[in-house]
Image 1 (cartoon, rainbow, N blue to C red):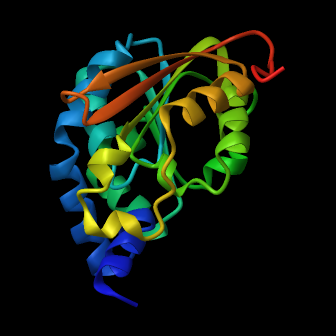
Image 2 (cartoon, rainbow, N blue to C red):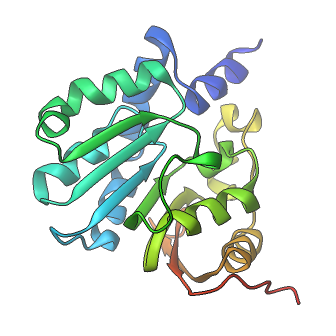
Length: 211
């Protein structure tokens, strides 16, 4: 396995000491995106919030310190969920946060569980874009909001490791997947166009925009 392939694998599913290091790098690299997503979320204390691919819980910690909302974080890496617990144990213990080792494709939540959900740089690693969007639609309440933030393909191309294991989508592909799942979709360029925030709002019914 090449170095860049190994780095890509650790970004997608951090494990061990290398995974912890990659998580720290991700937190540093993604700081500007974190600022954008927190602003767009516009949380209220009554919101229930889902972090999809929460990593070591850095963003959850920022949010929990600012808002009295209830938070849930999911990630596929057991070791990184343990790191998230260590960072956020106070909020877990007082009942304001739950952390689960869980895949986004089949979440163990009832329909309409969350007011808001967000994901930061995880869409590249989803098994299936369309089915995942349907699953996110399912767990959101009526008029709920999902914010999917990611780097543009042009930005990803500047990193050697993103050529391994990163699924890259056009704005059109991501927009269509969101609309097919039943969302209205608004795309906002961020960081001078090097990244995008896809703002999804849950509509009452699924529909297929290709019909």
